[in-house]
Length: 386
Ligand SMILES: *Cc1c(COP(=O)(O)O)cnc(C)c1O
Picture: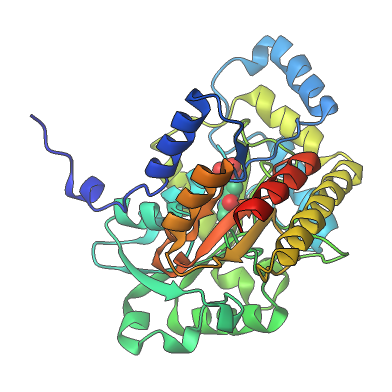
């Protein structure tokens, strides 16, 4: 009886629907599924964070509406963490905005700057809210293909001049989901120069900065000269501290950009539960041990999976960061068919790359959120169908 809005109609289809359905059906039949599809840490949140939530939840003053702009103590601990980790100084009152998970802020940010017809430069494949947020704000998407031959970095020189003029925002995400690619300093310098020249806002999604291996330490874009004028960076406790369900993230950087997002949000939500904000402080103030332990767990799983797949002849690159292995599918039937075959013949779930955009075709993504003995079991099954 009611017709959904044109904006809602124009959202990209949710391509994981079929594989989700097939996965549920397989489980219902009692099959032993090994699920590499989930970009969500399998390990629990650290105990001291849970204790901090419990203590804070006992205090009635934390039961009321939180401050829209986040508690000062959380903003201060984010500033301290950024300083320590990246040597970047941020003013807690004007340059940091806590979010109900960074997805929320990323999806809302286009509302702050896009007018109908304005263009957002969006990498493809990408984390879906870049496209969803742009469309819901009435913006137009210009895709920047992430191709293996460019190290999965967008080729800025290929963006037509007429598009640059209409572009208002550009999304970048390194270390990258789903391709696991990392950006080098030269790319960030060129990107900032491009943004300054064309007056384009850079949205830097840094969700995976702490999930890196072999001593690699990803950088914040805010470390680079000129970034203070054009960059808003999004960060999150989700992946770093195994806190995806808690919903704590933040935006930081240029104060005008941060306050515009705050204005959008003040019309939509009423902040993060205070007890969760205080638990977030406890996570940010913890020492590096927990993060190191998680990285070494993922690194062992990575080595196990990559070595095993390569021994099957799959030609897989070992990621320097993120918990995703991005795999060129070894046959020509396409990513969706290949993922369907893995499920049918080996009870293994992998995410077809095309679900992240058309340039993800030909790839599957496997997440290292599976215990090592299950990875070995999966490799055994793959040996039989290879
Ligand atoms: C997981 C993820 C996030 C974090 O999302 P939250 O809403 O903070 O849980 C952001 N960006 C990318 C690319 C991600 O994969």
